[in-house]
Amino acid sequence: MNILILGGDGYLGWPTAMHFASLGHNVCVIDNYMRRNIAQSTSSEPLFFVPNLNDRAEIFKSVTGKHISVIIGDCTDYRLLTNTIKDFSPDTVVHYAEQPSAPYSMTNYESAHLTLNNNLNTTFNLIWAVMENAPDCHIVKLGTMGEYGTPNIDIEEGWLDIEHKGRSDKFLYPRQAGSLYHTSKVLDTDLIWFYVRTHNLKVTDLKQGPVYGLSTKEADMDEKLMPFFNYDDIFGTVVNRFLVQAVADIPLTVYGKGGQTRGFLNLKDTLQCVELAVNSPPPSGDLRILNQFTEQFSVNELAEKVKSAAKTVGLSVRINSIENPRKEQEDHYYNASHSGLLDLGLKPHYLDEDTICEMLEKVILYKSSIDKKKIFPRVKWAT
Image (tube, rainbow, N blue to C red; front, side):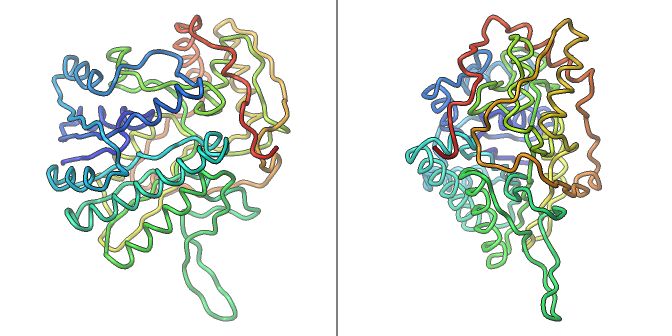
């Protein structure tokens, strides 16, 4: 297939590009380095140096013999995006090109405006570029489980059957996001659903939980091919933050009561899920929503898992509850369905002791690069 990846420089985008290129697909990536630039401007650089996108593609080719085409450009530029789709004729577009940090979106007006403008305009441009130039193309969009919030009922897989006053219908599951970033993803979904209904697009929306890890088959070939590994409070997901804190002998920072529960998955499973979605597109006029995670844990449970596993590699880990910088429920009901990807053939990697130890051992190699000033929360939802 011709597979176009928007946001191909990111934590998920680059591993996805390597994965599909290794499988023999014709892969093209677009990125404008927004995430790199925000990370630098907020002192949120990753644990280790990551080459630029052109250099990564050259290193990947030297190691595997496979080619990845690179376009450095902004997907909010409609002419760039539509010309790329017209020239490349993608069978599938994988859409990662969004500002991905909830804390960054809550920093100030400028960060909120950038998040809203980038995320919605990129999605809107993609919809129109596909409609006008590749109407049979399958859009695979990365959504987020954070769209649902933490309702006091079970979370279904995207849709909910409603009975009201003797009548019934099917609607998008009610969503109540906890940050502006997550709200922008809610708006994305509504935008896509409108154009699916009116223009018969075929779209898969992957509602992904927080991802952890830095190892994939391709990344393990050369350390210069590894994805960004952020451990700070702005771009670092909670598992990755805890791993670095364990290595740096910093007590694991549990926000508030620590009962916040989410669905998590290994980076390797992100690649699996995207591949399964790409290989089985929905029919035209269908918005397929798949909840993309493999296990549910509370923050307290994650902290205990890291503490226990760390003993195996000689680390003594402490856990410390700190004031929660976020406005969120700290003790709540959470039960989310996630059968769709399992039905498609997902073979999950679980967060067991061996997996945690393997990640800790990799982080230990870069212990001298850890900047402790990046650990503690710098952004508050409300002041």
